Image 1 (cartoon, helix red, strand yellow):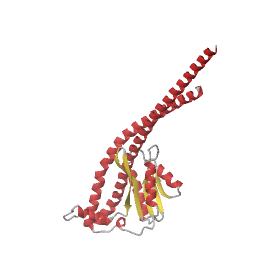
Image 2: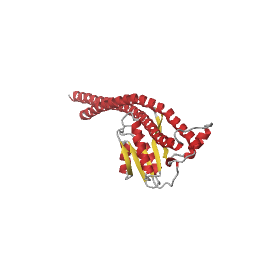
Image 3: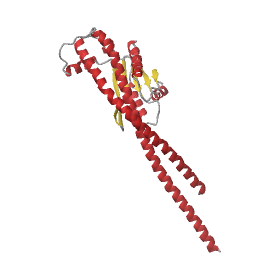
Image 4: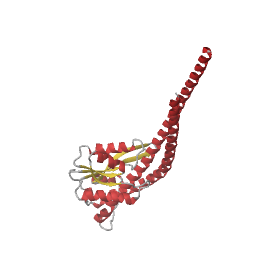
Length: 286
């Protein structure tokens, strides 16, 4: 009985230490979430504005570009944005499953992994990796998005992939994010033209230099902007998921401590009752 009571008490101390750690991690994630949420919200208007400019250009320029040309999908590349670390609930597993579902049945699927968790997931399943970008930190830079976008466009222009999809977690609020998959390349030219027409773009536009030159500079920048937006959304979603996971772990640890404390009280009460019974029994025997 005494040995069992000591074991329960040691376990209570261990769970209390774990609760302190998860509580601290929750507060750290909450602080980082606030900054990441602000960065993600600030990046959305610029991405929408770039898309609007590209839509106007697609309507009035009337030129073709390799990024706008549809071709048979003989190979597919997925840029999968996950975290480098775990302890974020189902955040990484949901993203990996969404990417795997996207690539299921695709011709010659390949993965460009952004984050260690996605890299490890697809490597264990024997998926061909076209590249990896790890350790981007808690505040992704636009230069990181440019490097990722340049690698994807290099593979696309070299004919090593005919479709490029971007899989990331779209931030909704502090406790909700949803995995999304958007087609990065080729850019849907008809959709852009439809968007430009729907916006009611009127008047005559003069492009300096030529429209093709404008597209040559704007389209790679547009790809980088979309990737950067995905990185910001993913980072805010990661911190939100980690904060929620650590909050659940802290509450579960508290409930376990209460349960173990109750068990220890009952064991101690049983031990005291047993001792009293032995004393009374000995006294009666005398």
